[in-house]
Image 1 (cartoon, rainbow, N blue to C red):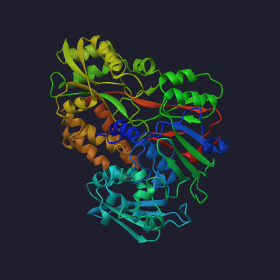
Image 2: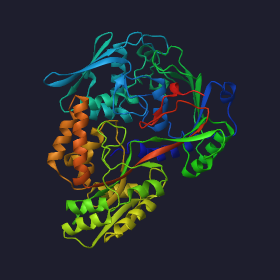
Image 3: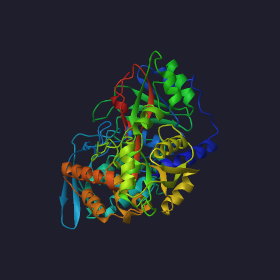
Length: 536
């Protein structure tokens, strides 16, 4: 399950807090870096306690990924918040060839690209960077080894500007391109990093708190549990050119401190604001609020091994009885998007269809067709807040109330996420409320787990073994034509929408506070923004 990133954040936060004796800076005391170049420095306030490394082959937590994204370039990329179309970056073009026994993807590098050091970017740098990921084998490496199924010998430079990467026929070429947009696909300056290697560490000690890339910014310094300073890269050959001279990322974990700093003008952007802070900022002079999408989906799994959830009409009745608009507008007050398919908004293959909205009579009719008049079920719910800020218990109570209207009694059982997942993975839940976020920005990262019982993931946990739709999902992953692939996914998601064992409740959004003079801020669902596009 895609808790690889989110599930370890709390533990990391505790470890970092315990290991670092230096207290976080107060919100009202900007450092000299923030004040000395205020006109040309963007000041970003956030909880950065998850930061463990700035090395793109190691970083897999939110803050590290945000910073590495701005210090390095990848072969291909997504622009802004749109994750449906892959575009050129360091590679000006690429070609996918079916060689019979494997997929060969050939990348042609753009000419004139340079690292911050001034060194030219060559195919050898790409080969070194990707083989370095495999050698280090840190948290994000599974995207290469498990998803793309590549080895050292899969990556070759055929000439100084051409890289050929070979995938087995069981891997998805389009999925691999999506993986390469993530920071694991960052190209490092091999000449520079090799001089920094110590004891066979492939330069990971140096890149822990430095950068050696070709991104719009370079890492100036990282003071643990305090701040990270970025400075514009004068040798940047990409687009857009940085509008600001630098970015100062301040570790301020308290939401109220972020709010007050924003109001005073000490912060330009605040990331970790809750609903209370967003409400307090409404109408304040010099401040605006905005939101960005995530790729998470909050859903209820319905175990088809439990009667009467094995009946497709019962499952459709449960979906039909829910007041989705009330969840989005009343509970989350706009802090969530109504999405009902298994692919989130923003990804290729996203199905905009939202056919369900609190039709009690239709839901009762569906139960009658299934021969059911009164049903009692248990709903497992995590403790704490759900994505978007509302308590899981409050969201569960809303469903309990909606289902009561059609004669379905739901007993809520709250437990820790760890215990809930243990029950869920053992196929022992009846109704299970939980979230899912893809490990890489491609529809296969959702469609596979939600449709393929053999993958031992979400479909398995709900006992749903529909071999026909699973085969269609596997076939769609291997389609190389983007338009045909997107169409295939929309057909699959429409089928799952009505036949699968899922109630997709919403897609959460992430709130931000900005000074009103900040322009060009766009939040990507991949958990980053392009600092180069921001001005003030």
